[in-house]
Structures are given as structure tokens and as C-alpha cells.
Amino acid sequence: MRRRPVLAGIAGALGVGALGAPRVLRAQTFPRIIIGMSGWPGFAPLTLAEQAGLFLAQGLEVETRFVPQRDRAAALAAGSLHGVVTTLDTLLGWAATMPLQQVLVLDRSRGSDGIAARPGIGGWADLRGKRVAVDRPGSTPFFVLACMLRENGLGLDALRLEPRNPRLAAQALAEGEVDAAVTTEPYLGQIRDLGPGKARILATTLDHPCVVDTLAFPPAFTERNPEAVQRVVRAWFAAIELIRREPDRAHEIMGQRTRQTAAEFARSARHFDWLDLARNRAFVAEELRPLARRSVAVLRDTGVLRAEIDLDALLNDRFLRGMG
Image (tube, rainbow, N blue to C red; front, side, top):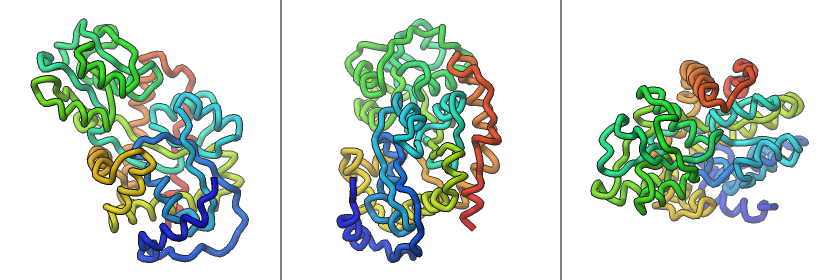
């Protein structure tokens, strides 16, 4: 999928030159990089970097390819993807089966993942014995539920779990089929719109921070192509800066890929936090490993993770340090 003729025009329209990167960096031979991801809005600055010419400005040809979560790790292992974007909890599960190196934290969930319930459920104790729609074990919604229950003194066995993906979980709650649902934006926002008479938000990741999104490559790829990976990271931060400078146009472009209007995308974006370079470094230095250790404990408790994980090898900050 080639975008070069279109990208130059988009880059000009967005004023990429204002970011100090209007020209392609000196020619070098880099591999074409394919990054597997989903349409989750938190990942969208990567598609902005692709469509606004920010990867090209770094001398890279990068394709962001939508690949279902269940297929992403297999595609990476098979070589049809070079990098993957996913949540930290999922990355930990994948790292148990293949060598991976996280090169960048993309965003933190700030209310974009959560649990909604019928109005009669006033607190966690009220969930005992209730029907709760949640995605399969190994998914991020399942992880979010397990984390929040653990912090509130409940186990998964206290609930009647009904398997639904985030969209269908929200739909089941709206239609009165279940008592509670674990879901994400934009579906969590749709539940909010139902009003307190039909549903309420019991808790989100604002109350229980447990979800961050990450970009990872196999270590063999980063060792062969360290400069290319470094430039991917630079392009990400250029995209974050572009969103800050020209939010309306950036939201429009990102929303096209996630099938949202600019206004809809902006609304979703209120519930996650893209970290600029300084905040990213601080998060990685102070919070990432404690979060990873807590995540490992939850994944072990739920039987999702059994193998040992070398967090030092997985959570490598060399490319953040390489930003200068």
C-alpha cells in the first residue's frame, strides 16, 4: 500500500514544516517497516505519522496495518509484521512465547477502559452473582476486570461472566441482557450517553490505572536496524507535537482511519493520555516496571500467564534515551 504521492500533499497541508522536519533526512537504506495494530484511537498517531509524511521525513517507509489482536503475535512470528502495537498486559503474554522488546509507551488509558452497570448496582459488592459481559481471558477487558476486582476484594468467581467483545458487551448492557459490562471507548461513551436512569459507570482506569499501550519489535529486528527503530520513535513524537499544534486537522486525519468524525475522535481522545518525550521518560523511569510487575501478578492469578518474564529485557528504554 503506497502513499508517497498523497503524503506530500497532506504533509504540506498540515504544515509539517512547522515541526522542523519538512525535508527527508539524508538518504540511507532502511527496510520497509510494517507495524500491526488495530483501529483503537490511542494508536492513531502512528497512522498520522504515516499519512502526514512524518515517517517519510525520517527517511522511512512505514505501513500501519490493521491486524486482529488474536492474529498479531502470529503474524509477527511469521515475519509478515516487523512491529506490533498492543497493551502492556497483552505484550506480557506474548513475551512469554517469543522474544520482544518494547521501544515506546504510546499512551495511558485515562478513563477509556472501564466497567458500566445497571443503575441498581451501587458498588463492587453489588456485583456478586451478577451477569457481567466481558471479553475472553487474555484480552485487555478481562485483564481490566481482574485488576479492578483484585483491588476491591473480589474474585472473578464471584461473578457470572458472559463472553462478549467490548462492542457487544456495551450493547448487551444497553439492552438489559446483563447487569454490567466491561468495555472501552467509544462504547463507554455511548453508555454514558444513555443517562443515569439506564446505566452508570462503576469504575474506569481513572480510578484504577492499569492500561498502557506500547510499541514493540523483536530484539533481532532492533539489533539489525537500530537507526530505523530510532527514527520510528522520532516520528511518533513528531506526530504528538503535530496533534498539539493542529488538533482539528490531526483529529480529522486520525478519525478517517478509525471511522470517526474529527469531533468523535476528539471526544474519544479525552480519555487517554499521549505522553510527550519528557513525560514518557518520567513514566518509563518511575511507573512502568511497577505497573508491569502488578500486571504479571494479575495475569498469573487469572491463569493467563505461567512462564517467567524478563522485564529488563522486555522494557528497554534505549530508544527514549536515543532521543537526545
